[in-house]
Amino acid sequence: MSITVVSRWKGPQDGQTLARQAGPIMRRHGASMVRLGFCYSGAFAGQFIVVADYENWETYGSGMKAMVEDPEYKGLVAEAMAKYELVDRGIVISEEI
Image (cartoon, rainbow, N blue to C red; front, side, top):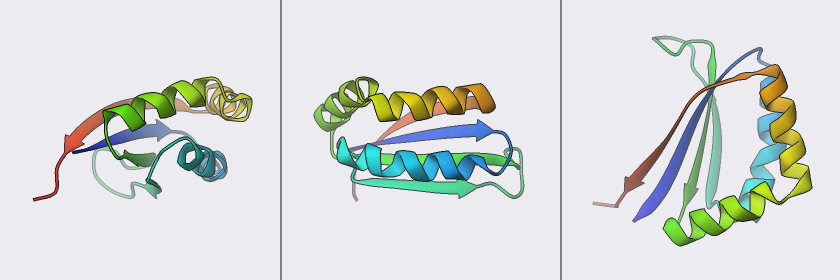
C-alpha cells in the first residue's frame, strides 16, 4: 500500500522553481517519487499540481515530521504560502493491482 499526496497550487508559473527546490528535500525525507505538473485545461487550468509518493503510512509520517523540522523546507513553504494559494491537498491510499 502506498500513500500519494496531491497538492494543487494557484499562482504564477514561476512557482515551478520552488517546487523543483522542494522535490529533493521531500525525497531526502522519504518520498519515493515527487512530480510537478501544470494543468492546461479543465476546472483546474492554471494550477500547479505536486504529487509525492511514500511507501507506507510510517514512511509518510516520519517524512512529514522531518520536513516540518527542516529549516530549508520550512523556508520554501513560507515563501510558497506568501506567493501562492494552496487550493487543495488530498491523500490517496493505493495498492498495485
